[in-house]
Image 1 (cartoon, rainbow, N blue to C red):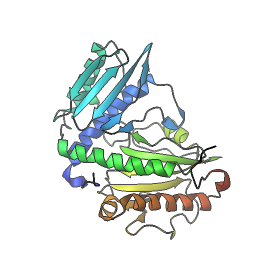
Image 2 (image 1 turned 180 degrees about the horizontal axis):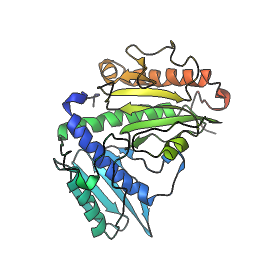
Image 3 (image 1 turned 30 degrees about the vertical axis):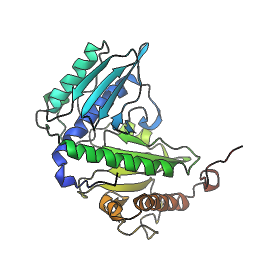
Image 4 (image 1 turned 120 degrees about the horizontal axis):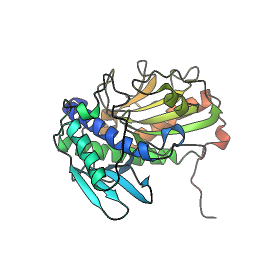
Length: 305
């Protein structure tokens, strides 16, 4: 399927509601999963049909919560074969939250989560949020297809690095798909200040130098979907002229390089445009940051022994 249209203004209300639903599901995983460095234990993962928590340990059983954006259900499955389904349709966050908690209770797997959203200005506790209640199935299907395309390209990009690198994973706090490469060296202490996120979480996430990239549906100073790339700490000269694809730019507001999604859609070779953006911005971060690229980069995948 071709890269579909995803103009932010056509599904803003649905995006905001879905963002909060993913936070509820992500917090279930967080509550039951051992801490993994850089919060990698909290993320969701792209599937051919949407997003999933993957297996979550629960005593001697395991649990999975999977958004199916084609059938428009949240499937709650257990390792002993039980399944509960919650319809994805116009419904309040409070109603969705109650339905998820009821399904877990019914399965004999009650979970207590932190009841307030993270990384959102003026958050409303889930159980009291009767404001966000939009769900446009067609828009969510388009978003799911975009995640599939972005995941495919970002996996190719990830394969070119043999140092420490994250999975390609979906952060429900910021509502973006991300992949992060590490130089291996400690970084300066992060200043924190992310809305409704403990500073210690941000500081642990950025405890080491990174070049990070991903896809975000847009918002704030850039109300359109885009691919992004940034470095922490940002090396001197990073925002200067580098070989970016046409249409990409450095955002002074975000301190990130930005590649608008519509530029990708309009290209006859969208995968290559995204790969070029990811590679050129990483090259700038790693070269200007004096990374040990001889021991981190991989030009070609390994062949047979």
